[in-house]
Image (cartoon, rainbow, N blue to C red; front, side, top):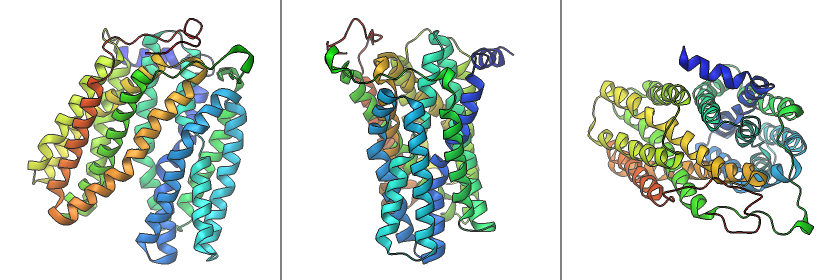
Length: 407
């Protein structure tokens, strides 16, 4: 009951339930669009290589432009930027589908995929920026970030299953269509909620330089996020290969779902705890837990044992992600908060593709068990970067530090 009380309190804030739920719907393209593109292009061309390349163009464009979109969100406000981004995203995805279905030149397909990736609304960062705006208590903000981590897990568990089912059982376009409707519709409804929107911080050149980014904290934090992205991408590919090598490929989805379930459960619990230690300390412990959880997988040969270890190992994911975003919120100037959130989340996104690629190469040459060493290495890099975080992180006071270096 105390756990439910903690979440009930934050959702009781005026407008909080509405923006959190619409943010959930609007985030579904994050887990559906890339896979949906693969299924669509492969069905039309018969080539997984081409399908993967188009999907990669989409994801790379998203990773490159996400930080710029975060900066615009801070300067111009969520309503303006999200509304434009949502419309462009919808148009680009329609062009992508049409280019594939009508057999337009492949360059058109690549261009549409890149435009769609670049314009994907950065709802995850916006939702957390809203929570930081409406909640004054750090403990309640911790609970809100935990709630969003749980909803992220819902997106990544439900989205791939939904888009695959629709694309294979209904029509190759159906999965992407649902992703576009959720992304565009959810983003527009989210943007229309003005009561909880953080104020815009337009550039005023007469007031001096913008508050500096806290690079002393942000650089190691971004390295942590990128290493975790590598870990996630490698673990997904390696787990599918692990099940396939044992003639149980159909179980790969269940194995990954157990991993996500462990994270979801721990995220719910973390949000109800009032922590004595700061997020920088929790992040060090979380990265240690991630690395430790990956270490035994190299020695496992049984799917049943792997199921148990992934469920347990997933427990480290949500607390680590919550701590990283809580730390970002603590050190970023309010006028650049969405930009900071976008930097960290882009780090995760940027790491997934290299992690998946590297583990795939290891699987091809040495088998899935050896590929789990990639996840161990990524966990150790995250752990090492977390040790470089300042031992005492100072809460950013924008008024007091205008024009001064942040730490």
